[in-house]
Image (cartoon, rainbow, N blue to C red):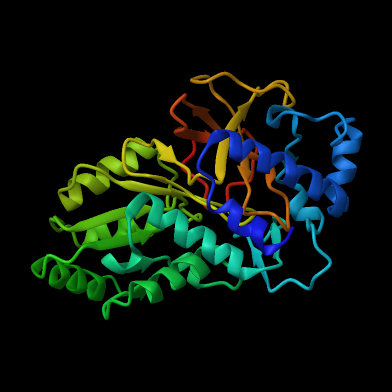
Length: 328
């Protein structure tokens, strides 16, 4: 796919355009991604007999643990690795062009929240900072630099300094985004509760074995009470994707125009689920052009006619890792 096609991904304006591009990327990945091609052939699904987006096969996300899922001969510019326990194999995402990832998360963020430069961005991501190869740390680091605010930055375990920074920003009425992993936000809520009027709190999910897993409503309730706010925002992303969904409250996520969530029947993974019914989460991420744009995750969720979706937990026996949302 040439540079014109890459820009086309980020300028989609209609469902018809999305579907036309999805079919073209399916053809491209079938031709150049040996792992995906083999999987599609096992299902007897090829560009010759797939004419609708609903017929495109979704590669199980577990393939990223066992195979190099790439649609390019180029040497990858980065390899992102999922978080995982020592007993689990981690997923690896070979990213051919970091510029595509940057475009995706910058434009994706702006499509929901407006200009990054309008915010001071504070990141509370200790478990991610403690290891190499986190796509979330890469994204947030870039957003911090794009914000250009002198107080934007990462916080590891220095919660007292974070509290002092938040209070200064509140006094200055600065538009602030605090993005954090769930267990660290709970630590902040317990140790330094404070009213936040000009701050968005965004959780990325995950207790990372540091705390008991909570359902989303319980987590959000604790955070809302501690910080005197009415809504907690959420980010839905994962190592294997190059795009993110965002929730501005109530657990309802929106995707940028080049990303779409479809649910599958939990008993029959090749059958798609109707709106409003719980199913396995399938992701179409057209930015993932040099990897695989069609991924069947281990999350459970619901989709709605307006394009929003909800994440309800994970399939039983799935390994809990990455930007996973709370267990059922």
